[in-house]
Length: 132
Ligand SMILES: [Fe+2]
Ligand SMILES: [Fe+2]
Image 1 (cartoon, protein in one colour):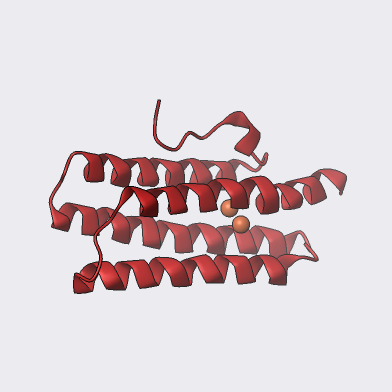
Image 2 (spheres, rainbow, N blue to C red):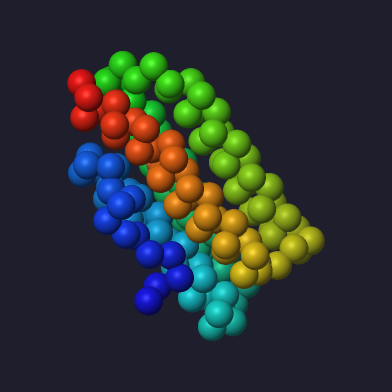
């Protein structure tokens, strides 16, 4: 079983968003595997950078879809996205400075954030789309 499992209840019923969510889970698993296997710092840095870029890209796509559908909670949702991007930035910076190493705790933080955000927040948007 992968570390972060993309289960059916996480699907929001929008192809591109679901595909990107799956991609984010895969990136988290990739980073987790690199950590477990004791891969080089460079390799971990690269995966972390990819996860960061992909997260930003996903948030942009998701927010555009929300904007196009006239989602009333867009601004609050954007704020949640911004907070995570900030946290990932901090993480990357500390990691680059050598003031922290990646840990299982960090991996759980990323996995739990993503899972909870999709379940609680992205699904609210999915419900809004279904109700339209
Ligand atoms: Fe979201
Ligand atoms: Fe999302």
